[in-house]
Length: 209
Image (cartoon, rainbow, N blue to C red):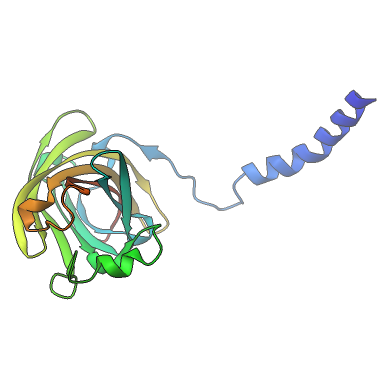
């Protein structure tokens, strides 16, 4: 009896599941490539809806990490599929868009004790060179402007994939950057919070030209 009931239930549910998995008629068939050569050359704009910038900072002398998310970003990518190392990228982060799970802490962070966003509203990365380290990975050299100072930094990056989005070609990247905040004059609570900041960037770029 239990087997018969389960079989009947499966026969009822299966058509609905199959219908959910089948794309509607006329829907675009999307395929994702891992090959950088398949992403068309041209100018791309960062899609802030599908971009995440996370800062990880050591807490309590190294016991754990605190994480902070920045919700407002912009940027552009000049992509060269014949020679990805010749590509260029810029990313700008609105520092006042910081988010934290600690209640009321974000409003304190944007103030004059910490990020001083009234004086330094943005942080900006501008690439100066790319060195490929694998078929989809590379090290991006560039400059970071943070709290009014500009210093050289590097990003360990990889192409996650590329393909066609709703409006045209799309490229996705993931990257990690590390720097010492004291190099930029950001010394508040050193010892309680680590000097090194790790920034994790996951971004989509939409082709515009």
